[in-house]
Structures are given as C-alpha cells and as structure tokens.
Amino acid sequence: MQNTPLLVQHCLANLLTGQTAEPHKDILARFQEDILPEFFGGIFQKPLKVFFDPINHFLSQFYQPYATIFAVGFFVLAMIWVGVVLPEHYVNRGRPQKRLWSDLRLWTVISMLPHVAVYLYFR
Image 1 (spheres, rainbow, N blue to C red):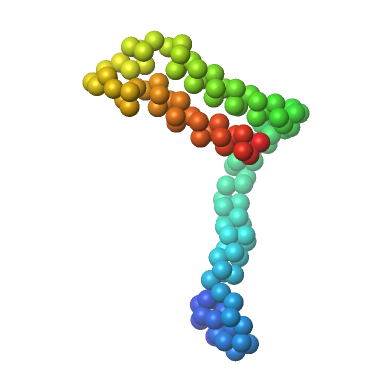
Image 2 (image 1 turned 45 degrees about the vertical axis):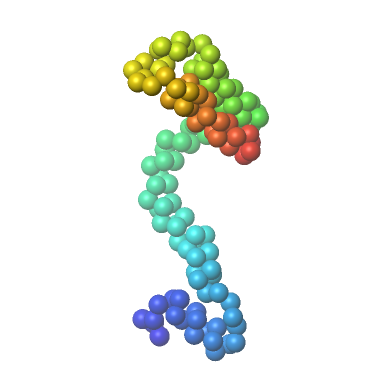
C-alpha cells in the first residue's frame, strides 16, 4: 500500500472504519499548512530575511496605527493630486474621446479606492 496515493489510502481507511469525512479537505489543509510553507520557506526565507530583517527592525520602533495613517494619507493625497491639482490636459494628454469614462483622473481615484479599503480593513 506504499505506492498507493495518499487520497486513495485515506478513502480506504474511511471505508474500513465507517467514517464519511471528506478526505480531500484533510489533504488540502495539510498541503496549505505544512507543505507549502515548508517548501517556500526553504527557498525564499534566507534571501528575503537578509533584505527585510533590517527594515522590520527599523519599522518595529513605530506605533502601528501611524503606518496605517501614513499609507491611507499617501493614497488620499495621490488621489487629490491627480484628481484636483494636476491640469486636465496634462493627465488626459492624447485622449481621443472627451467622455467621462475615458478621464484618467476618475479612473485613478476608482483604482485607488480598493487599496484604501484594504488598508482600513486590515489595520
């Protein structure tokens, strides 16, 4: 039974014991919790740690809500800058149609709103 795939082994064990659990969920959970982190951690952990450890050490000194305020403020200021401060002819240079849906100022604000929502939701 060593050459039998894990899913088949699990199904046979469930049939013999009378359990009706869904084996693919157990295997998927094990894959997500054990195998993937171990695989990617072995490949990427050392090179990324060299780069990110000094940054994490520096940023750990600051109060966490300040990071959220700074990030959201950055997005809001960028939206105001593109939507209000920059001239329309500069932002929409070369725009063939002068309709509202083709105005890049509007699409800049629309595309940045999900980023702001993510920062506010996961703060």
